[in-house]
Length: 288
Image (cartoon, rainbow, N blue to C red; front, side, top):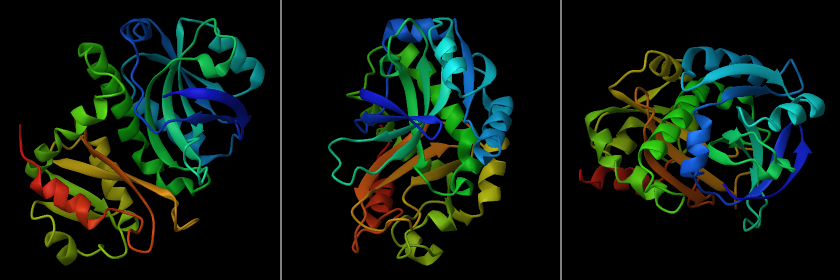
């Protein structure tokens, strides 16, 4: 992820960034193998995120040793200068080219080292969590899956050095037909209000799917269900309804593979959630 400058904001970092998947260089990925990952909590101990991320790493983080630290200028600044440490941290991100200047929270894996500025720390994996400011219950139940995706992304890019930030999304989307053999879990609250019934979705997507609760999604993640793929929608959750981006990501509950990544600008004709063209694209995908 390209980071042009950084400021401290609400216990996280705010980065001016391009909306693209971070990929580490071969040297950075090699360095990560020898690090201890510092799981960075936000300053406010009462935040649900802090509780949830600690539970999440206990269940789902296995790519490296880890320690939990609380974000503070002195503690973090000392740790980030250590090349034997990496960081699992929630960053606030916006895209300079986006006229709306919408801010997103990303879950990122970054490397420590002798970097003068925070913005220079290499970002080797990242995934959008939510629009900044939306209720934590809209994403907390999916943190386990997002943590496992980051780990799988690091393993994938380490084992396949030909993958880079220019071709990684093409690689991921090339696998979308594989979801035809699985059941697509869709949470009611994440669906487009014009496409939120089984009948409407089945007319566009003839493969297995199920409209489920957030609790059912979290259970599928925890049991690593090999027959389930999950929609992770990142939108404003009603805080703003038009002229902002909606990201749509489909990830395997068991393998944490990314099978689909797309986004659209929300409007009266293209509401928040999966659009008809998303379901049609998934339905028409061919195995390679």
